[in-house]
Image (cartoon, rainbow, N blue to C red; front, top):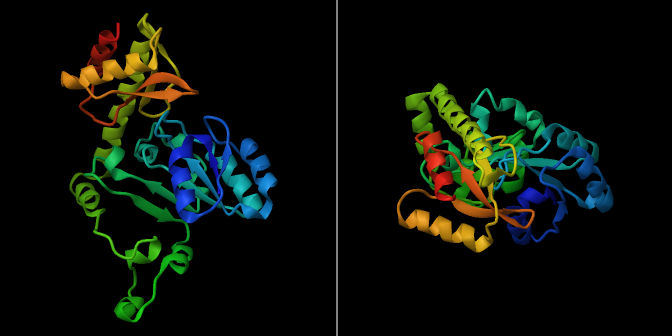
Length: 276
């Protein structure tokens, strides 16, 4: 299994469960140029590549088009992790960032992260569902009644039975429509852009990366990891916000992830002022 460095923690856990080796491609963003030599180095032992459509930590989208092209050339399955960022597909202004996603063999998005669904829900989509069914379907005498079913969700993932976690999202979509979701995600994207401008204007903080989606990464000049942690916990104790520190290239930073339409630029300004 080959994955970009941004997907390290979650993919490492999966590789351990599946008892397979994991090859990491260095860099904040996976590209075809970086992927090709990694696949060449392991030959036909690489059966899958995991790309990211909006990394949870930085909100970056891999170069999906070039990654998909390399995967086709090597006959490798391409899975795209859009757990957080995939929701931005609902926003016309951000859709271009996901060019190439249509070539993925499988794709996930977690509706509870940025599609306003209750915890926990994960949507898994396949280019060719018959492949997934051939891999995951389980057969036993007590399941005989299910064999002829037109569609059985337990046939498309490793679980045999699980509650219907997608129903809250389905009901919400049915009630409000896709346009409401597009407007909500666009609101978060707009607030993230406004937040980036506030960071640029403040003398005591720096913008680490230009936000692609709704994650704004901030560096407070002169702060240590403990400074970020103490500030974050104090903010939470006062009930004024939930903004957690993170790290980028082994340096402590502040990660602001805007996935609530009620969050405003004024809220972000108050957070930045409290860091002065």
